Amino acid sequence: MKSMSYAALAAAAVLSATLSVSSPAAHAEASVGLALAQQQNCMSCHSVTRPFMGPALHDVAEKYAGHEDAITYLKRKILDGSTGVWGTVPMPANTQLTPDQAATLASWVMTLK
Image 1 (cartoon, rainbow, N blue to C red):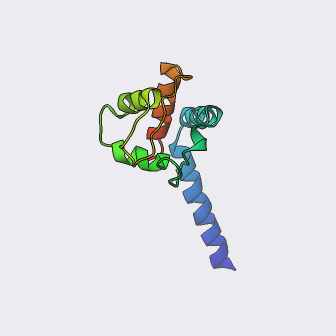
Image 2 (cartoon, helix red, strand yellow):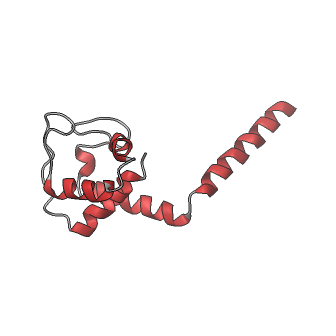
Image 3 (spheres, helix red, strand yellow):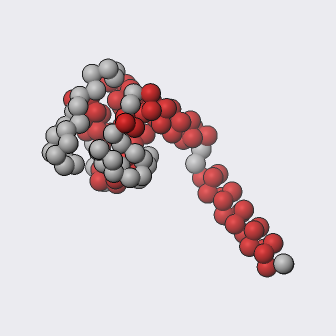
């Protein structure tokens, strides 16, 4: 029984430390990015963690993690669409988005790595 209490206490400490690493601003940015992705129907073709019609957004973040211009590049792909980067299914242009919204989405995607 004692060992279970210590294990629970240790797990709580690790979880608390993990949650305190990210700032409230980071949580707010993640909420805004996810809400925008859902509102603009990005999630109709993408999932955060698994490939669907398009690549998993986590995979996109990992692919471009080392690129200095990743957010600018993804913003352009979001606005203009793309073909052949992730397979044969084209990503249509998202003409309903403003450049600022596309930048918000690109920034959010890059947090998913």
